[in-house]
Image (cartoon, rainbow, N blue to C red; front, side):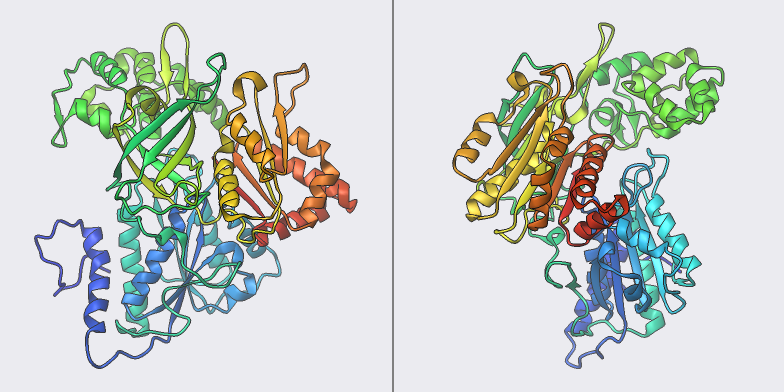
Length: 594
């Protein structure tokens, strides 16, 4: 099936669009043209169920686009989070399109785990009447690239469903392949079902199902979404202040961006993507090592500018690592790779950037022309927003730890965190765009209790949550677990939290500063200490929210939460796991982890 725009397309041949964009727009133009005819097209008889699994909102955004494309082609459509679909509901659907990201080391995203558990059961209904296709979102720098999509695709096939189109696995630059897949899948379904552009259907195209109210507009399609990675808004930085004490081992800063005339409307719990530039000093070191001036041209761009604005030079790509191993099979890197132990390789690579690997490779290292194709595109960095639009409608606040490490021989620094800290002055402009996160938000019920666990910079969204609830006059109690290394140097937003306590907004504040005593104390320690009270809040309908490090903290917090539930209920580990699963289904256990 051709993925190019159909013959007779209304898009001018010289329009400045890629093939993917033209393919996407063709469907919309056809729908608009048909809608203007006096004789309405028949109402669609086919409804596409678009099921999404998302961690940061990209999959939900694409799900919304799929429904819009279906509507333009005369099909019905609705989006639903995967965890909101039971196997019985799935078996009753005719056409299903799954869009899912992959979280961590090949895991399902947070709003797809229960669905995956359910469809693996031996009692799950067969799916012989279902036609489906899967779009996976991932990052090729991870070993389990798009694993969630691959697993769902295979499982549907095992259950007898018919694949209407081959799965496509998208890397971080997902827009073009996703648009091509979307156009191809929708065109095929429309052709096979005889759909005609312009049809409408009650309960059809454009509907979004949610666990809370059954229907509503997705936050991924809020105004301001015209700003994206290809077209970021140039926001003015209006504040940059140090939060941690200068004596601290960490450097945590508070930033504020003026939204100006962007039209961006955000929600507490969303993330903001910051478009960074690589450090000029590192670019110069890399060019010197390569024996280049920087004036050389690659893909029509001076190499110095390319390395500064468009290529990832901090984190080596898997392709570069494979090339270095092939060039020097007896090197230390090759020995580590040959072991086949991913964790050992991660440990070896930790702290090493592209320049480090080139220096290690010595005379076998690739030259400039050979190296550039191995460098991945420079990606925006996403940070949890630490403000509320009710309190700060014209600004977005971020709370960021500046990443700095190394030794006397060489210092390293984070790409975006030190770009903001060291190279952007107040008044300068920075490229930003919103990353909505519909799955992580303040409870809609202002009377419901809220428990927040956010050590370190994990406090960011919860500062926004507290300001949101204060602005709404929410009566629900709020409990924050916060901690870091030392109370004297790392207690960020201390004055604000004290004021929120005194005003009654912050009902409880449990602190865990790990290195202020001989035995380390963490937020999960405080949770276990307050086991009975914590369970009482859960029984009162509290939403339990977590933000921060996924590899350790979030897993330890979940283990502590399960232990609290098991202890208080006295019914064993399986009962505690089911209790937590019920909380997930009710959207009362939500995480923003990275």
